[in-house]
Length: 471
Image 1 (cartoon, rainbow, N blue to C red):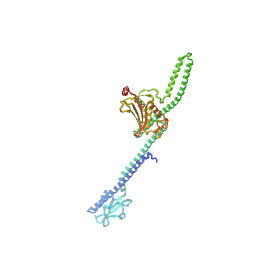
Image 2: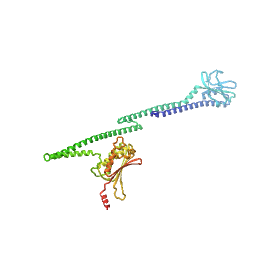
Image 3: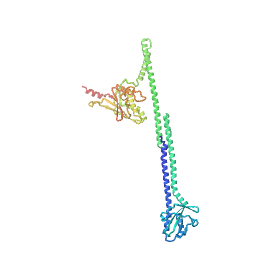
Image 4: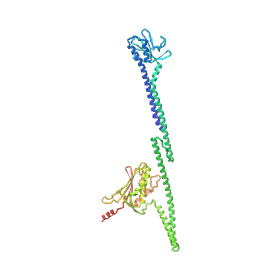
């Protein structure tokens, strides 16, 4: 079931509104009850005052009591004589008296309703101890009671209403604002998914939505750069395939032309301009050498070897792949040794070897992963004074090769990548073995380690030490 963010924001606020309404209602009812108790307490105080008086009740006493409590009073003595306040205008004998009479004034309740001259009253009767046998009838105007009750409950109701209305408007406004901003972010991500990597305008308010929008823009920029890189790579790949086939055909044609000129030079020996033919042959040899060099790109033949710095080769590969690691947010740690570690080999092939292995590690680690590169000296025999081999370790935090292809990882055309060819590691093994080295991999502590072991070139002092140790 889909749970919209609008309702996730709106429903808690509506529950808060219901709570405010409930609290306001309870407060209003409590205030109304306190107002009723206050009125009844005033009347009870009047009854207590009359009970405690030692003098006969005078009409002006009742008038004063009416001014204090707001109620009208009718006093009927033991002989049936009536004393009333001015608010009771009915004729004697026509005044409706309540039938329920309480003996104790502290228990009186203004429960009964009656009408006197068209006016509605809350009334009750109570027996007085003084004067003996007298009955006091209390008539409280219902209009005054309603006014007192409204004055008591109005603050709670007004405050609750304003708070409830404010909460409702706030809930609706916040829900609409959040929903609109989230819908805009969703629309923008769909646009990016469709291939449009243009930047979205950021909101003026500096909040989490602005941060999320900035993250979406950063993602769009990275995707645009990645798309551009992929397009360039694809163009280069297609160009390499086409140019490779074209170079092969051109080399065949150049070879045939060179052979034909050589045969022609032997046949016309001394009868033609040999210098022009030599120039043509040198130009064809140069073209053939360039084509041959072009065709040998990526091959594993040792070709020319010379002393080269192993640390410099790895450092060059790290520098080349640095932008790729930063683009994919991959931590690339290169522990460059203090010693250059000289080896004898083909620098072009070795550079391509390390470039391939580090690139594979970056792809395996993925965004947010880690790749560590270090060079170690290996001492095969502790008694020998010279370390004769070094080991390049490339460690990535990826999941490692698939189980099905792990045993055949260095075989040609074996790959776990959907778009891979399966020649990178096979060529890496051929280059390593051509340089009398060793390549392998293992899983250690949830990490994948690829290593390349190569023989170090002995220094002059080491060579003298080695020769001196021979019999």
